Each structure stands twice: as C-alpha cells, then as structure tokens.
Image (cartoon, rainbow, N blue to C red; front, side, top):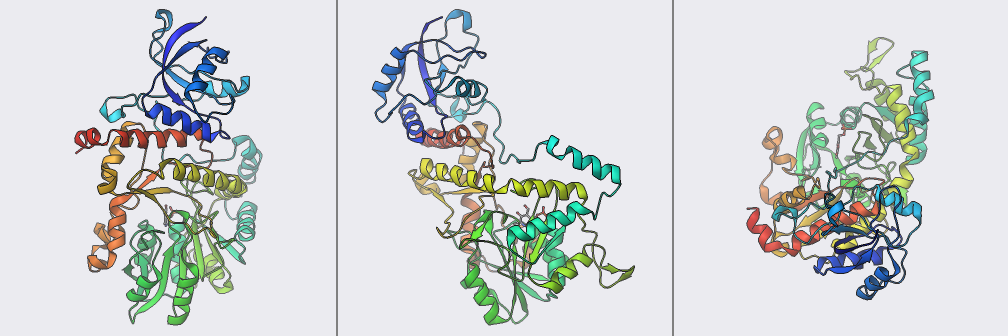
Length: 500
Ligand SMILES: Cc1ncc(COP(=O)(O)O)c(C=O)c1O
C-alpha cells in the first residue's frame, strides 16, 4: 500500500550517525514539514521508504551523507483505514533487523509545541531518572539456588568474592562490605576515632551528614566550588575550628573531588580525610580509580548506583586497623561474644554480595556508555543560553552517577523548577539534587553557618537539575530528552506564562 501522507515529526536512532540525527532534529525544530510518498510500515515487516521519498528528503537535508539513518515519523494525515493510529514509524534505509528494533522502541515523535502547551509529549511513557542495569536472572540462578540450598545466606563465599573483586578494582588493600554506605560512614567515623567538628559540604545527600550525628560529631558546613560542585579546599580550610578532627568530602555526582588539595590540607592541619564515595564506582582521579587516596572511601551499592547489590556499601582503605575495626563493627563490635566497642549489625547478605559481584563486572561498559551519553547531552544542549554542566577535569573520569545541568533563569528564560515542570509534561523524570541543601533541612538547621558562607551551595541548590541517565541508555532517549529541552526553550515566553 502506498499512501500520500504529511510527514510532521522526525527523530533519529543510529548511534553512529549523530550528525544526521542532529540535522533531523534541527529541521524538525524549525517546524518545516516534508511531504512525499512512502509505504507505511507494519509492525511485523517494517519497509524501507521509497527512493523517491528518500531523494526528496535528502534534498531538504543538507549534511545528510547517506541513507543509513532511520527516521521515525509522526503521521498526521493517515488514510481513513488506518486513521485510528495516531502515531506511526517510518524508516529510511538500515537493515531489516535495525528497522525491526526501532519499531519496537516506544519513542514517539512530536510536533513543535511543548507538551505543557498542549503538544504531544516527547515520550509516550515516563522516562525514569534511573534504570538500574542488573545481571540477567539466568546468570544468577545457579548461585542463588546454591545459597538457599546451603543455608549459608550471610558471611559466605560471595561476600569474600565481592570484597576481593572490589579491592582489586579500587586498587586498595581492603574493601570491606557493609549493609549500606550510611552504615559504612558511621563505622568509619567511629573507627578513625573522630571527635568534635568535621568539615563537610552541605551540597550533598543527607546521609553524608546523618552518619556524623550518629557518630556524635558536629558538622561544620563549607561551601563547594560552583563548577565542579565539590567541596572547595579553600572554603574547607576556612571552616576548620580548633575542635576539627576530620574533613569529609564527596565525589559529587561521580565527579572526582580535588583530592590533592584536600589531602594537602588534611596533612598540614593534622586531620583525617574521608570521602563519601557513594557515587564513586567508575570514577578515576588522574587515571586511577578513587579509593586509596585518603584514610577511607565509602561507596554505596544501592539501586541508583553503578554497582548494585540491592542495598550495600563498601569501605575501601589501605589502613589495616581501620579495616579490622569495620569488620568487627559490622557485627555488633563483638569479638568472641565480648563487645570491644558498640557496633552495628551492618552485614551484607550473600544474595546482595552475589549481585554486587556480578554488577561490578558490568561496570566498565556501563561507565563508557555514560561518557557517551554525557557527551550527547553536552553537545545537544551546550548552545542553549543559561544551560551549563558540571566541570569535569579532562584528566579525571566522572562516573555520571547523575547528569546534572544548571539552569540560569535570567539567561534561559525559565527557572529550574519551571523547566522541571515542563519536562514532567514531556514524561521526563528529573531530580532537584540537592534541594534543600543539608544545612537548610529541618534536622540540621541548628548547624547552619551564616548563609553568605555557603553562597555557591545556595545558588546551585536553586539551579541544579539532574536529567535521566543510566548505563544502557539508548541514543533515542538521550536525544529525546534534549529535544524536549530545546522545544521548551523554543517556546520560552509561552511556557513561562503557562508555568508560574
Ligand atoms: C552522597 C551520598 N552519600 C550517601 C548515600 C547513602 O547511601 P546508602 O543508601 O547506601 O546508605 C547516598 C545515597 O544515594 C549518597 O548519594
């Protein structure tokens, strides 16, 4: 069947053909329409578009060098028999398998009106902020059955395997598995004998700080660098008091902190240095995994992270005494039924250890894909006024546990919260990490310093927006997210009026 249809929306799919993808999106964004004749695809047998249509399209697309790109279109005027289908997918070129794969993607294309103004949402279904990548169940089944069959559901060989694999990966002498990053931090603060004040950023997740309160410490908040969003070593130095025993810094969103400067500061002032490395698996500091560069690094293995053990944490250190304390501390602090100190139950089950071990094996491909996704975000959104990105040094590698943009209202035309609401209408989940910052949260206000001392923290907490990212995110999803931001920006005045 051949039908004359008006072709209204275009999007892209071939990962290796990003320049073509961009061209399509830009043509689409200008609101031009193409008309031509082609064969509608059916789900079982996607057809290539006709040569005629292809030539016509090529004429319109300066910069399109070959036909190995796929096009997904929105059919506005379907013949009566198929009119009930509101959206359709059309393809140019590619192999049959590629076309079939694309047919099964849920990505639907759109008109130029943002959804918040009544347009079709870029995504038919909600794009979550994160989609954990887990090993296939079949790959776990035998070991799971063995764990259950043996009755050895905790403190077994999978725990040892995870600890060994993590220590090798992080290039440290000890990687001690615990039930969460939070409990790992609590035990680490205790093990290092910290007392009094601890310098810590407020632009972080609350667990960096709650664990301190449990260890009887007083958080002294210091500002972060605006570009990297990590603890600023100069502000950390300003925050040191006569009672300070340690500095706790964070590799925020997976961006390695300024380890050298913080280490230098800690050594000069005789302080312990600990990193909350909840986002740290996959991070490299000047080519080396973060892990061995301080007294301790404490990781999270919860489901939003790159290495997942369902729930869990790892304390990485080269300090034998510290590792020993965590091993005892994760089991009530007991040694032969005598309590050496007040510990916790912070053990990791064998199921979690098995999952964590297998998940660690998936880390490297995941992190490489996140680098590509972040490059696409930066390329596709980088020219929008008022949108900026976390500063990552070229010598470091960010894990991109989160991909965070800053939205400067005066330049972009919308506040971060307005953009977030408009993205929500496009079916795109986002997060306001970190709003409010820790020092403004109810439980920690009593520790808040003068607001001027946390000026970057306060500004970032109004501007930062985390976009969805995960380790197997397809090009269509990241480009769809960018397309959403661009078309929202294309109607900025009306969107601003619609979302007050
Ligand atoms: C910076 C930071 N620290 C600590 C934690 C707590 O980790 P967990 O849930 O493993 O205790 C998180 C959790 O996301 C985090 O983002």
